[in-house]
Every structure is written in structure tokens, then in C-alpha cells.
Length: 192
Image (cartoon, rainbow, N blue to C red; front, side, top):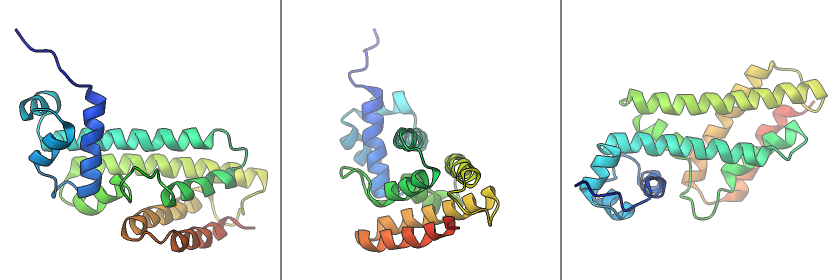
């Protein structure tokens, strides 16, 4: 008779995600994952497949979590400009229990050239963020609160590029003042 799972899949996937986020894919061993997830190696393989499959699932969970957090925080805002500023603040001031930086950006810099599946997941998530920025820019330009000197898609791409760079910097430094200065300088692009 088959044994029933003695763990919550989403919980242990979240633990694996945290290990990959802190250490990266290459530096994370199967033993690291087994210990962090608190399950037997056999259960891990039976539930998630190999290390790469687990990583892709963790990456997808992270992307969904990040997108949900952005939407949740943007909904009560009435200003497109405030929404864009909030996205930058989320990169500078993550939740305290989270590792520094961004799992998607970390994956882009570590694996994108050699792992087409990981690269496609990162590209999909980046595209969603850029589309959100384009929507906010378009709404802000229509309401007159954001300069119309650049087309929405071009300004969104520029803002997204700055966000990605800020995510890299957030992993490298704990100097939040410097990160805020970078964000403020970037947000000048929105001025009329």
C-alpha cells in the first residue's frame, strides 16, 4: 500500500525556493534541499522530480508570488506614478525574512545562457512586469501625471531595465540610501 504524503507540497516548495534564492542553482546540493525541505530524498524525487524540475517549480512559485504581491500592493493606489514608485520601493525594501535580491534576476545572471527552460521562465516574468509598467505609464500619460515625451512601451522598457539593475544592486549592497537615490534618479524619467 502506498504511503500518503506527510507534508504540505506548497510549504516544502517554499523552503526549496528559499534555498535556491539564497544560494543559487549551482551551489545548492540535493542534501541542502533535503535538509531545508524537511523531507526524505525519495519523497522529494517522487513529488518534484529531479533538482532541475524542482528548481523550475520553485522559480514559477517565486514569479507567481512576486506578481501577486505587486498586484496586491498596487490595487489600493489611485495614481500610476505612485504605482511605479511602489514597484521600485518593493525592490529596495523586501520583506525582512526574504533573501536579498530577486530569484528571477539571480537566475537570469546564473543560468539564462545555458538553461533555455529557466531563461524562458525569467523572460515570461520579466515580460509581465514590463507589461504592467507599460499599462501604468500609459494610464499616467493619459491622466497627465507622467511625461509623454516617450512612447509607453519605450518608457516601460527603460523603467524595467532600471528595476532589474536595482534588483542586482539590492543583492550586492545593504546601502538602502544608495538604492533609493538610484530609484529617484530613474523616476525623473516620469517628470514632465
